[in-house]
Image 1: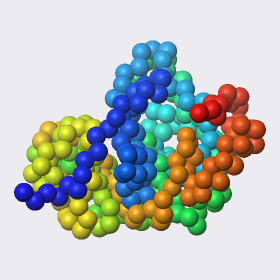
Image 2: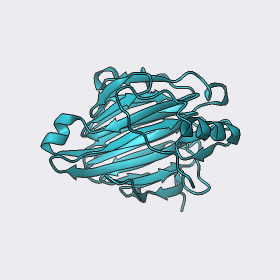
Image 3: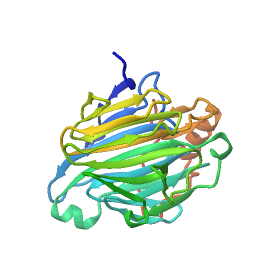
Image 4: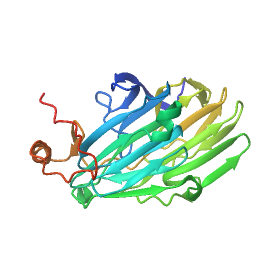
Amino acid sequence: MTTSIAYRIPGRARDLGELVVRRVLPAGRHQSVGPFLFFDHMGPVDFPSGAGIDVRPHPHIGLATVTYLFEGAIRHHDSLGNDQEIIPGDVNWMTAGRGIAHAERTPADKRASGWRLHGIQTWVALPLADEKCEPSFAHHAASTLPLIRGDGYQLRIIAGRAFGQEAPVKVHSPTLYVAAEMHAGAQFTLAAEYPQQAVYVASGSVTIDGEVLEMGVLAVLEAGVAVQIAASEASQVMLLGGAPIDGPRTIWWNFVASDPALIEAAKADWREERFDPVPGDDERIPLPEA
């Protein structure tokens, strides 16, 4: 039997304290798909009144963080002074480069009333030429992102280029990142536009060229093959991939680098409080000692 799926990666539960996430990438020998080397599926989780997430200030180097929500809201606050709430359909793209610190917390109005969180957080590796670039942050409202509507589905281009449309988000390498919302019975074709492509089901279930793909599983596709994605029920699906990373990366805690010496320097900088602080937020996550 021929298959369009090269391999599958099921999400593994990771307890982050305030919530449990499904961690899909990295996974053993499968470090990345295109430039994506970290993929966390958050929720869906219901928080009672007074509860929420409080990810204290912590550092990053050598990557871009990307937050995309289906439900809820998260307040991003970073050492460049950016203070931005992200809501469903928006994109927060933070380029760490040589180093940045940020915090992620539940907005006060959500915390007061009780709320539901569901979304995806990813890390994108920066090319060698950019891994020590100046840090930056960009917010793109849902209304600014291309939205393609078809028979029973819609495709929001989060970053990069797909389906003949390009998102305004600045990317550092060829990138595929699309959120698909599908009614039961809807279907569309994903062209073989990038060397590495994958499909993740955040809710519901779909088939890929007739093969069932369950919720919480990443299907990495065979290279050079266009596939038909059909929804067996109402589904939320992420399409991701792009050009391969230009060389292996070391991942330690929140740091990504082509040279382990950069990670050792970042450890020392965070331990000695040489990263710029997040304005108005005196808390910090200490460097892991392991």
